[in-house]
Length: 213
Image (cartoon, rainbow, N blue to C red; front, side, top):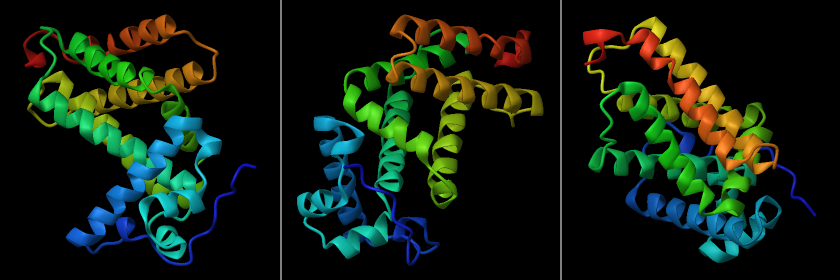
């Protein structure tokens, strides 16, 4: 049986203004790891909050204070994966000369990572798709992080222009749509690759000539 999202009784610590303590952050990491491991084994339906609580060794009520539903949990797991990707990219950035090619390489690296764990990818992307207004903060955080990763890949150090920001939004929309089509079996990996490369070509239209640097 698919577990239905539960409405929060109070804000989760991760979404509150006060920063988490070291102990709270460690607990949150355990919860994310437990949820991700369950998803790896059986996808979205395998992530049941009681099992997450048991696996992460936290009380069920405590778990719900961090993540009011498994949708919140899995969208946060997606954000966590993107954060780790961002760190890897900063250490080993793409070497392509053209900004559009660097953005494409960045997103294709992320896609490659997701392809290696298809059940987890399916769970995280289904959660992102199913998320309602109650998980708006988590969804917005993923969208902002995706945009930041794309902007960093362009290599532009000046503040982005409205035109560039618009292109980044379009790339983000296409990226998420392509991934959802892939996990649902409506697009092949080759089609996702082609779509990502095509939409990233829009970067060249707003970063012409010397403005690319």
